Length: 544
Image 1 (tube, rainbow, N blue to C red):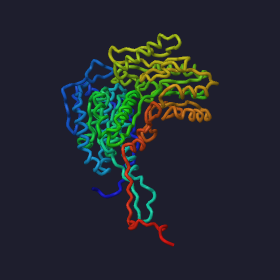
Image 2: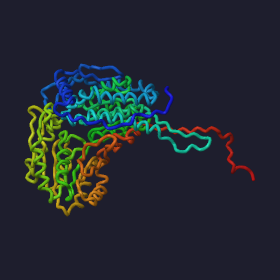
Image 3: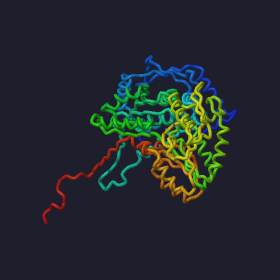
Image 4: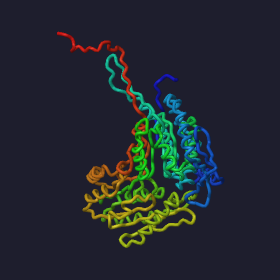
């Protein structure tokens, strides 16, 4: 082993490229999009360093062009879950024995690959497979993923450097951060390529071995991530990527004695079921599993009567409709003062009239398709119900079309009932519901916001009144794990705003921070005594 105390490169947020007309990055991305559409990619599972093909395949289609086939991916069964666990456990001893700086080097290389030669490819895969526009793909698949890798390496080194502050004369106290005793199961969502990559790599970076199951609608980009990890030098068996039905995987993994933790992003219902299953099986495990999860949100925008109208309008339009409202943090309910409502309404309708909806290949489109037919049908039902309800007014959108892709127009509903169904239930789509309140009822509205939803992920206050900002920040302290002042409730950046919420939104273990990495280690305290006692007797036992 190398000898030395090593300093890792100081992390900096990856610069966001703008993809302006005639730019080099735009040309590279357009070429990658054309390349992706020109063929049907065959996507294997990756188990123990081997590409595994079953012949039982599922199809991947762009959500904005559902008649086109991008790829076929090989679907696994129970035998592949067991094989992935076996491969992970076989790799465990060598991986956790590898010096931490060697692990760091692998993931720093992965960051440079995704920042450079893989950038257009991972962005194009995210655009085609998940229907993100160029900017949304760039800030996710390239920048955030690179930030996760670089900042997590830095956090890892800080964790290892944290040692007991006192070692008295003749004693040396130290703490070792051990990987968990077993394997980690990473379950990743469709909406962020960076989350799909971070959940397995954050655990692996700390010396753990991982079984990774992505959402089927994110497999196209997950495959590119895995290719980058392999090229960066992640050893065989450390991260095993499988495409298996969730209940099939869960039945095996959550009953396995070596199950040591789950890193999850997805729905609240699924996470609660996982937690319940782990509780039922707790006697089967060698150790108490770590349970880390980020789930749903019913995220809010609150405008105070002192709000800047342009700031409020931008927070609403960007916060609700970027990536079709499919961010965990997307604004889906808003509370606006009556005195500002006419101007806010005017500004929103102006901006929405300019927004174009369509495929990602056309860079003029701000809004693209929702992820799949199931999501489309769910959202269409809510939109139809609002259109038919005389108690609410649909002031924008209210239409949808699935003939070519899963397109829902950005829809704005105005209600006089702060507990109207779309103010309370998570929709996960481009539907924003507004409640206009009397200016004098600001205090009352704070209580409504805090108690309306089971979730507590993100929210924001738009105000120029510092007393109002302080009041809202305190009153809503448990209503959002990420709280924004005079900005939209989306767009958390690694190294700047650690992300996560509590209540029904998850365990709030803050992805993109040291807090999250600490969940994937088990500390061992070591006390070494140099001049050891040689008798059981203490001085107080001596005779006078």
